[in-house]
Image 1 (spheres, rainbow, N blue to C red):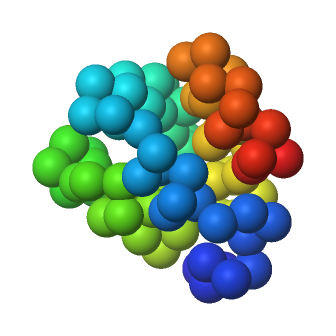
Image 2 (spheres, rainbow, N blue to C red):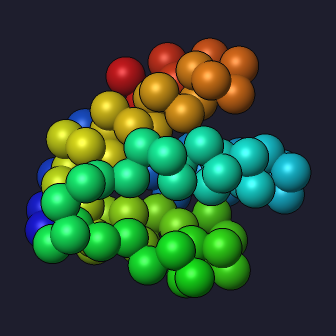
Length: 89
């Protein structure tokens, strides 16, 4: 996988700006967008327990960087967190 420094944005601080409820919503919106390719399996049990920092690490380590960027922006938009979506862009 591509290291976090290769992402076009820094995911961890964006996720850490979410409240607990927002982080829970982010995770629930992330589920349906998960990659279909089994080789890109996101460990859902770990995701459920993760805080913002841990979630960023899981996504960066399990998924291609372009997917992480695209999905993060989509989820922020669905959550009406356009401020974070714009930072991710």
